[in-house]
Image (cartoon, rainbow, N blue to C red; front, side, top):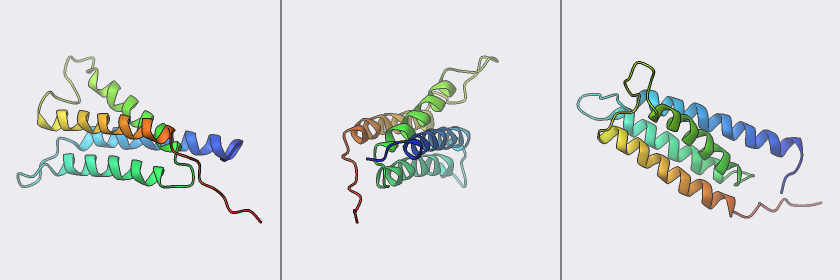
Length: 122
């Protein structure tokens, strides 16, 4: 298990990455190209594949920080805007984005139980 500033940097970086990906997913999830919900497919694919990639890295527990960042940003977007409208509507793309959040919560909790990777010693 990595300790010290490197570990903190990994967790902070994963948290920020989750926030950025969550913000991007919220921004594009309503895009439709030629009748295909391309934005939703892109948002779900990038969100889940990034979480999987972070979990497969040298610090699998940092995937929990990524998932936390994503869920917090999308959760704030779910709360509505001051004008009275919502960034994530109560329709199929909105529910799919929320479902992605539930999947990320499960992945984040599972990542907390992931064993640390053994580093080869000299």
